Image (cartoon, rainbow, N blue to C red; front, side, top):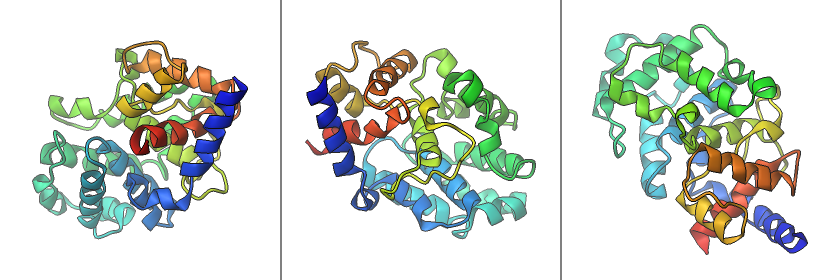
Length: 249
């Protein structure tokens, strides 16, 4: 176990560096300084964070550009006609209708809340599954097409919720390495769940950190529990190690 911890710690330090930002979707929110702009651009970037990384970054940049590179101000002031250009946006199965719904829902949320942070505050008491499900319920309260629901993960239905967990890692984790933002101070990092995808799952199984064969919510929880043995206060920091080893090695 000591050798495994040494490996994970080494890879965490290797990949959790500013150089990691350039070709990653986290580069999009790093363009901003206002908390709300970081949240919105981060949430939208994480939402489309599947597939080719170059394509993800390119499309996320395009999506933010459509807001005039001022996401929060855009949402607070946008009229229905201002959303029309977004109907042409496509990233894989995330299409213009989905994009319009996401922006409309975010607009409704930010006209009520100053931040997305309060919507996840139950995580400390009730865990990530409950907090994400509660957020999903609020997000889906805006009128939408049924097809759009698949883009908001539902851990209670078994989804690993990789993209929302990635977004939460960005917002909650805080260190001096310069990648994650740590701008949500009310949520304890130990409550985060490790983002689980095909790459991190493969590495985790090869290292003996994960036995479950499916990349679902139970697997994400199993992996997070295994990682917590190496750092109980910040288990999700090892996402850098697993992802990095899955992509670069």
